[in-house]
Amino acid sequence: MEYTCSHLICFSPTRSSHLIGEKIMYGIGSERTDKTDLTYEGLRKPLRIRNEIVVIAVPVYGGRVAATALERMELVRGEQTPAVLVVVYGNRDYDDALLELKDWSVAHGFCPIAAGAFIGEHSYSREHFPIAAHRPDGQDLTEAVDFGRKIRHLVETGAEGWGELVVKGNYPYKVNGPKTPQTPQTDQAVCTLCGFCSEICPVQAISVQEERIVSSAEACIKCCACVKQCPVHARIFNTPYTEMLFQKFSARRAPELFFPQR
Ligand SMILES: Cc1cc2nc3c(=O)[nH]c(=O)nc-3n(C[C@H](O)[C@H](O)[C@H](O)COP(=O)(O)O)c2cc1C
Image (cartoon, rainbow, N blue to C red):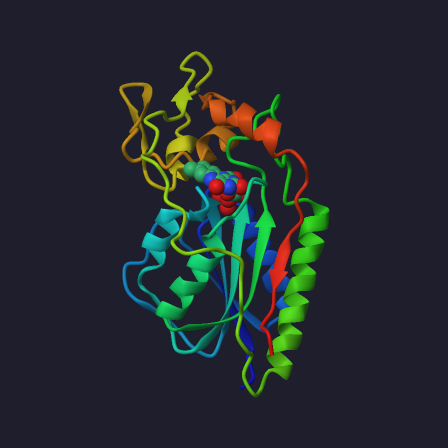
């Protein structure tokens, strides 16, 4: 089968997964490309993908695939469609996320042909406690493009089947504790009420009410898109995890790539 189209499916509040996914797509170099970005809303009707190479790029939250990504991908289906699985994590670890994404892909009709764990600036990274700050950087993006090129080669030479893809991860998947009740806050003295935070919040947890920014702690997934993208830096999320992650996980980690075992 000749694959002339590739399709990026992503969920990416702070855009690292999106960027890595785009670079992999560039490396694959298909004649036509499609994109389903589920960051700001889920699908309204089922999405069936056949005869395309699918790249699925999602962030790691608590060593698992971000739960909102899985919810929003629920209506996506393949028909033995080749899938490239990508998790992006903030330099601590991706634990069982890639295995979870592989299991998800098989259960939804995809045939996983390659996988990668890439690094993006941690959502909790701050100026004084940087954690993988400014990643993915040039080196990461070059690796993502090269990964895409290898996938193109694999697809062109894999006529007799791609072989079993083994990725890192364990069963049972990592279990996380209850959600912390903290949520980003607004410095009302700095805020200009532009409403941008509300527009880019993936879960509509932020609204402008009576000249104030109001955040719903229940809806918030702590992705920190609002903190990182506020044009006047009025959104603040101080968590003790930031310093802990900075102390323990500052050493640069490299992307890990997985190919089928023939
Ligand atoms: C709630 C939450 C949990 C996270 N858990 C992890 C984790 O377990 N390991 C890790 O290395 N990074 C973790 N991160 C960091 C993200 O994986 C990282 O910032 C990633 O680049 C975000 O992807 P995005 O830019 O596509 O949104 C977490 C971030 C959030 C918001």
